[in-house]
Image 1: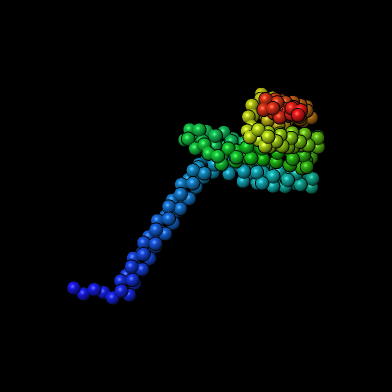
Image 2: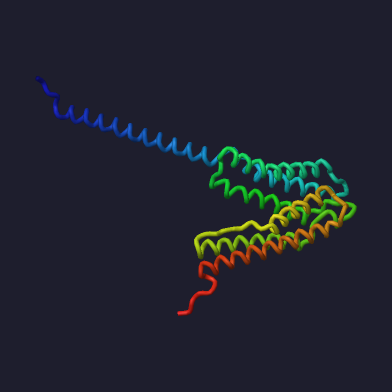
Length: 244
């Protein structure tokens, strides 16, 4: 019986070890690739894709709204820009219910959707209010063409206070429990109505009346949410620290 020299056996062993290590590396790479594809499929659901499209529609709406306001200021309103802005805003608003329906009906709820959905909702509302505050849409009656300055200031201030308050709650007690209030829902609806009032140039009531109603419920809902946050702090024992 003939035995191969030791150096040949060592080389063959090294080749086998190399093939084994390459196989392990391929398996690890395949595992990582499959895990990435699984994560992507769970995050990039149909519902989340709809929400992302809604977010991407916001700058398109703002652009058309500003362009139309500029055409009004030049004395030559480009109505196609107005109708385009209205169509974009309407589609983005209606698709809010669509992504929610898809997420519920097809079990596509995800942590990414929880983050993206309020960004799309608030982004659309705030962009509409801010844009229609700096861009006048009415050549004949400027009071119907834009919001008074205090309206976007009120809406932004309330949302900023609620955001900071939620962050403080999470930092102090580790959780935030938000109870949707009917005043908050009414405020959102009236803000949407106010935006539509300007874009459609409705004359049934003065725009200021609609804005005052929206501003009132915006402020009241903010007070209710802040009060609820203070109650949560008190329940957790952070509002009145004990004296040593």
